[in-house]
Image 1 (cartoon, rainbow, N blue to C red):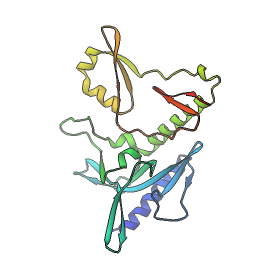
Image 2: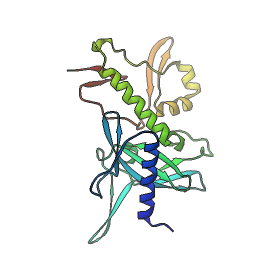
Image 3: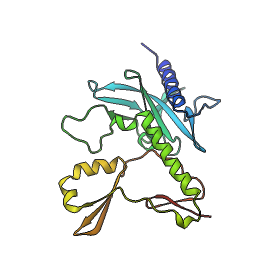
Image 4: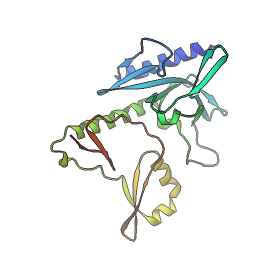
Length: 233
């Protein structure tokens, strides 16, 4: 049986290899025992990444990721949770599946563990369920790079007023929302946005509250209602 230290080392190597294959430069801290294990250089930013091992649980239907740290002290092991602002991303390596996953820090902070579903729930529940497929490493990196590219385009536009606001994903009717509420809630939680009309007039906006993979906004970029939409002095 592998020791926790060996599992942790294997997980870090797997994440480094996955990032390197995608052309992402990986930086490592000189000293150990910091709050993050490595940095990803994406565009002009370096994102702090904490790496964890994930194990298959619930008869192969889910992945369990411990999101707390443990260190030995004079009085025994001390376990602590990550606080907001300490890391930017959480990477996890599932040994049994030989797969890496990348999650937003918001999912890891202020909690001891989280689960990712590998298969749909038997009762059909999809709201408030984190599907592992949505956080697979290559797709998550592509999402980050796409957002950075969009932010750079905004920062380079001139004049600022020429940059159009990002349009909503779709406009739907109130009747359509009522008939397929569960499906639209799931899509909104995944990051999509819907504007709902009632009797042909704008009524409400449906957007997700779940944490999303994101980049820190560069200085000088103003984040408006639909994302980074103008540059300020």
